Every structure is written in structure tokens, then in C-alpha cells.
Amino acid sequence: MREVEGVPHRAGFALVALVLALSVLGASALWADPREETPGGASASSEYTLGKKAVEAKDWANAIQFLSRAEVQDDRNPDLETLLGYAYRHIGRFDEAFRHYEIALRLNPRHRGAREYIGEAYLMVNNLAKAEEHLAALKEICLIPCEEYADLEKAIAAYRAGHKK
Image 1 (cartoon, rainbow, N blue to C red):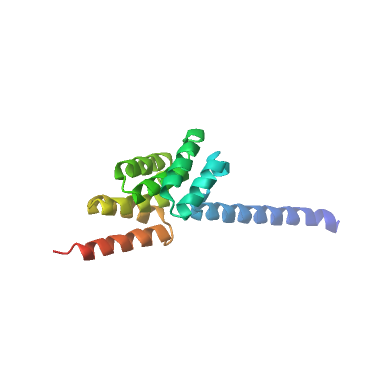
Image 2: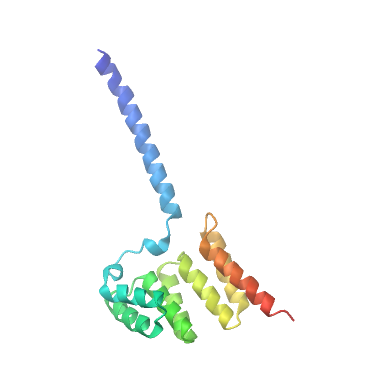
């Protein structure tokens, strides 16, 4: 008789454990870095991998070459578009940089890396107002303090300090 009576108790315990596990998993998804959650083939692409390594090595020409080829294979990857924007920004081709950042943000409006980098690019072309728009967006996106918000906030402060009248 004890075993029969224990079944509902165990089932109730299992249900509570399941609910707790799902709530923890759901909460961690809210804090997940969207740059690491992008579906699609570009993350597995050798062109994308080579492009990412070229960005890390600050080899902008090769980064653009590899990432552009990866984009042909997967034009729905905001990480790839953000890296292309970043590489173009570093060689001073701001029109191309902005184009790729905007594509990344159309694909994922909450992409923190794209928001930070486009904000920094706007500072480089002396458009403080647009940089501040992206800082405000990051403030809304980041549920807890995030590196992208802190970095853009610091860049804006440095910009203001250097442009005092």
C-alpha cells in the first residue's frame, strides 16, 4: 500500500522538478548571447571560419574576401554580416560597413555586437546622435549589464571628451 500512496507524491515531485528545470532553461535563454545562437550554415562554413580568423588577426582584406564568399552561401547570418561590417569599418569603407551592420540588425534587431559596432562606426563619421540611438537600444536589450553597452558607452564618453568646444 505504501508504494501506491508514494506514486502521486513522486509524480508531484517530478512535475515540480520539471517545471523548475524548464524555468531555469528559459531564463538562461533570455541571457544568452545572440551572437552565439545564430542558426544557419555560415557558422559551419570553412569560408566563415577563415574570415573570422582573419578578423581576429586584423587581416581585413582576407576577412572581407572570405566572409563575402561565406555570405553567398548563407545570407541570413547576422554574425557574418556584423563581421563584414567590422572589417569594412577598419579599412575606412563606412558605406559598406553600415550596409552590413544594417543587414545584421534586420536579421536580428537584438544583435548586441552589431549595435555596439554600428554605434562606434557612427562616432567615426562624427554622428553622435546615431551612436546614442544604438546605445539606447543596447540599454533596452541588455537585461543585465553587458559588455557591448559598456564598450559603446565608453566610446561615446571618449568621443565627447575629444570633441569639447
